[in-house]
Image (cartoon, rainbow, N blue to C red; front, side, top):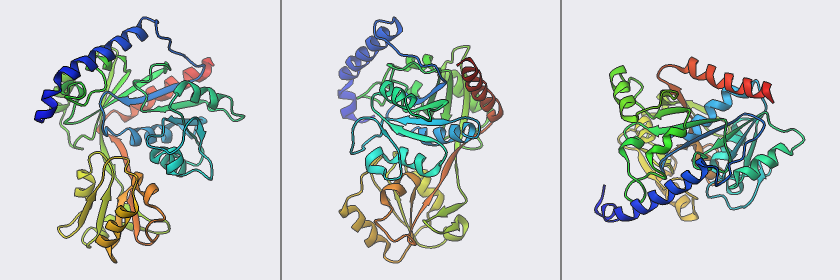
Amino acid sequence: MNLLRKLLFPFAILYGLITSIRNFLFNKGILKSYSFDLPIIAVGNLSVGGTGKTPQIEYLIRLLSDKYKVATLSRGYKRQSTGFILAEATSNAAIIGDEPFQFYKKFATIQVAVDVDRKNGIEQLLSLPEKPEVILLDDAFQHRKVKAGLYILLTSYGDLYSDDFMLPTGNLRESSSGAKRANVIIVTKCPSNLSPDEQNEIKNKLKLSINQELYFTYIDYDDCIYSENRKIKVDEIRVFDKVLVAGIAKPEPFFNYLKNINDACLSFPDHHDFTDKDILEIKNAAQNKIVITTEKDYVRLKGSLPNDQLFYLPIKSSFISGSDNFDKNILNYVGTSTANC
């Protein structure tokens, strides 16, 4: 923790007090939460920064979309639009945000919508002729105006909410006591060989309630990179000189998976909107080399570099253990809720 953040500690206390009062008012029903007559799963975190929400949402899409009509609802962070928007053929990352656009391009059978007001967004989705049977709320753990039926809370390995402080001293959006609202807690971005002893140590730190489930996941990188028309094995390109570009919160694992000693690694802020100057920097670094970026950044960079030069590396969330139990519980919740509807 740097000196400035330590000096801002009084503001962290004030911020914590404000969020605690807000949660108290929702808990007591003084501020109203709205429920809906269909299964709604909210995925979120207590902290700012990347905890792996996008691959977790994609995991749920893969699990559910063969059986149900699935919709995702996000706020559309950094989009250049307002209000409710349902993704369609003319949509792009600027209109709906990079992560929702990634969902739209990747999963042809689902509905993808954005709205800062999640209550209004759900109402709009339910007014469609083809209304969804299950809605996945992206980054909505603090959006208490809507009461989801199931809450999945993510926390990063090595950056657990139990070890963090309130903003601006730390990175917490609300007190760690907010974790009590979660039905499922997932520790993300773990080493794939995380030992049972270390898992148990983390479990003790998080102080779970008796009815909460805990899982551990890791980022599983694809063994191929993809362009508009090609795919290449990672093992084939790892030894070649290339340019790696990432506009994500913690790019080091992405760089480390692909790079050799001669590669140029260009890092930009999370959800970065690439400018003409940025594109020129990438082109100057690349010359005739291939450029590999994250899937999220690819939807922003596509069209700015030649199709045969720009590639992306997909990732997915994989469970260290317990995936069958997780899947069973999610399917049971959705199936039971759908039957009750």
